[in-house]
Length: 90
Image 1 (cartoon, rainbow, N blue to C red):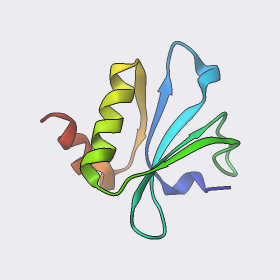
Image 2: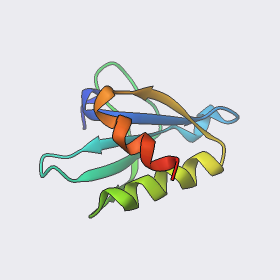
Image 3: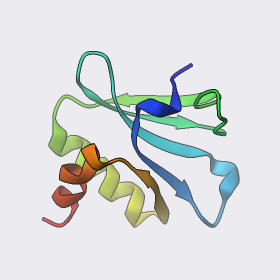
C-alpha cells in the first residue's frame, strides 16, 4: 500500500464519490505515477484499482487535464506539484 503522504495531487469526482480517488505521486525512481484507489484512509491510499506510470512530466499533465475535463476535481495539492498545475494552463 502506498502512503498518502506521497501524493502530490489528489483528485476526486465530486458527483460520484464511489469512484474513489486519483493520486499523482512521485515514485521512488523519481518518476510520476497516477494511482486510482477506491477509498482513502489515514493509513494509506486504500485498494488500488489501477496505476499509470509516466515517462515524461508532459504526459502526466495531459492525464491531469483529461481527468479535469471529465469532472474530477482537485483535492489536496502539495507545493511541489505547482509546476505541474502551471502546465495545465498551456
